Image (cartoon, rainbow, N blue to C red):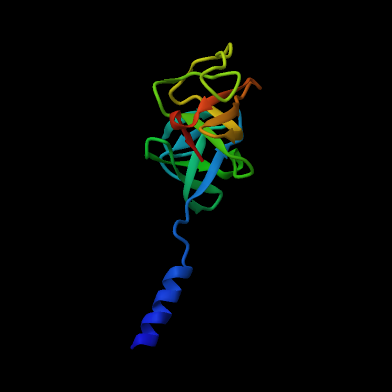
Length: 147
């Protein structure tokens, strides 16, 4: 009985904790849909670098979750897992020229909720990002949902 318990425990420990995977929108715009196909209703239109969490796959379509926890479907060729992305989860977030409050805000500051970015690097509690237009800056980590 004890050996059966150990075998069961070993199998349990070897299972992945989560099958979710981070995805980033890699197209200028992308339609999220209520089902896996273009005949399904559009639920949201998102822009480049919007992060999504992969839940499952059906054919060429991914079922994904957004920062609000809502589920959608997106065509697989519109997303990538080659880099990390972030979206502002706060009402607004200052974009700074360096990693800290002592740095001035950039010309594109502030970002507002649902603005999306590609993550370039992190330094402490700060994240260096680039937007779809090539503008770079630093945002406080707690203001972002990163995938």
